[in-house]
Length: 378
Length: 139
Image (cartoon, rainbow over all chains, first blue to last red; front, side):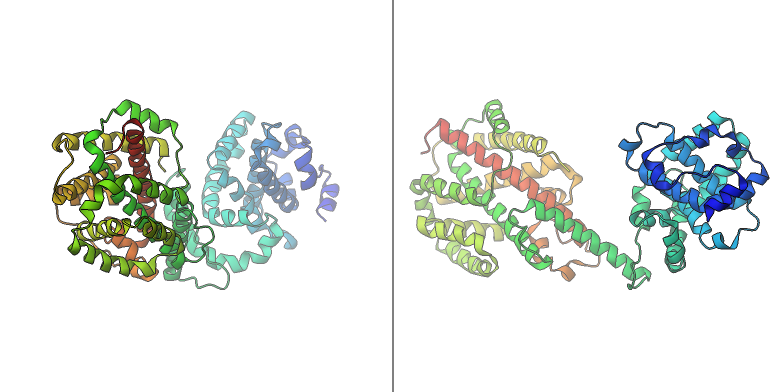
């Protein structure tokens, strides 16, 4: 139907969005009539709106994948201009045709926000494009309105980026979304008074989008944000702790993490004990040690090698520390209590540790000493 | 976050300095009494944690808490509403230094960084032991 309008008015119809992305015809830059602020042409713009915005949205969608557009450097400028024209026609329009009224306001606003996620370049492009074309009269009116409109529509735009950018969907969902977006917009305008802010701080504050079927009051929104942050952190921790990929659920994950930290602390204890016994014999030649550190592998596989190393080191220590271990009944009793408390918490992987300990036959006491020391002093 | 290589270098240099200091205090002969051994052991462990905390600096809450403990000041127990119990983070806040005075989100952050540093520290200590054992026979 839009094409009929075009044919009757005698203006070249813009190419379809699909064709637009693949081949870059240049009717716009060559055809100066488009930039003419002639009211007759402006009245014809309403027909363009839906198609322009679809094109603009598709161009911006394409603009988000820069490699394909690298061939056309002026493309972003042109895309910016066209979105501008979409909104400008909205401003200049007095009596929109009934078919386009419902779809156009959200559609026109849709055209501008998809540019906004690109950050500052589109406004700059727009300004440079305008100056280069010398269309100051047209361009000056627009940026002021554009900025306010863009900033209001940022949340809608960014939320729409997740979905398809077709304006028809906007018409259907616009009514349902506006109630939810209104509170986002109210929050936004405070943040967007600051000019060209980096998207990060407003992002945390704003883009708490209430999903369908969920409560939209501020308390539950804030709680949801907290929960999402916490789950994010848990994912990070999952990468750090070895062997956590199989475990799902927060409680089990937390148990794994706690056990891992405890085992690391135990290792520090154990290694410090060894170092204490060896220390006078060591000469801390820093350069040689540091160079050795650099050559060696960064992250040992900490699961199995830990316990193997401990076994090896136990043999070395047996001669020296076994005398220190026996006459310590007090510490041993404390350690036993502490150890038995800890045992139920430990998952399977520390049982290997315990088995190796039992095999060696003397580490029981030393580990208990370590744990008792840990409890007393740490 | 921190590049593991730079972190390890920092930790290693600090720890080695601390161990050098300790070495002069220790008697060259192996200690006879058990108390002496325990004292040495505690000293090395304290050196390990102290060097870890000072290498990280006051940027992290756990390092600040550790440094406070080393200096013997009172713990800064500022408990903001204690949201830990909701997610079962009771044990974690006991284990991570300075864990009580944090909310759940930052506690998990601190835990992640603490784990990284602990891993690096353990590696350093083990490498020192390996290098010393390779160079000289152990006792």
